[in-house]
Image (tube, rainbow, N blue to C red; front, side):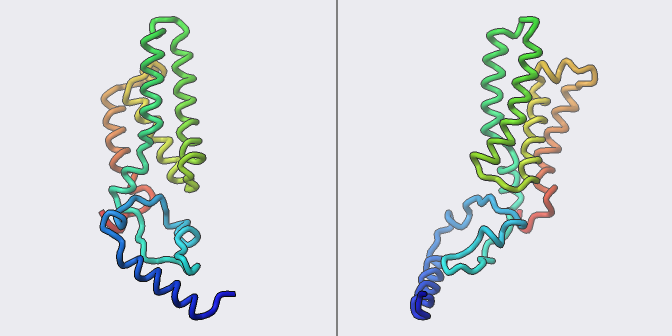
Length: 172
């Protein structure tokens, strides 16, 4: 059991360390939402740290775009389209690539990035699908109701509107 003086020393050290953080450290992107803030943000003495505000609009904008999986999808789709895009079986292969990309986005966020907020996973996975639609891949472009202009406009609205889905940000 730590003594009162050692607990007080820890508090003083934490306060001094908190005061000496650089501006770059203060502006680092945190993947913390309002729902899990109390369980995630404990300071060194075990108290809930209420000094960190929610994500800004810019931080939400960046974390809701699944850039890693979009880049991998574009590479895989592009290579396979170049190698066998004129084959009759390629649309079926493109569907499987799209399905793998959708599932891969959700699994990547959950397993690799450690995202536990289902809202963030759903927003990012939907964003991935809209990016694929805007790219005009064979699977989507062959649908009778597909319109490239509508897909592009929907993507722009989604990208800049998605940060507002989880509530109005405290800072911009």
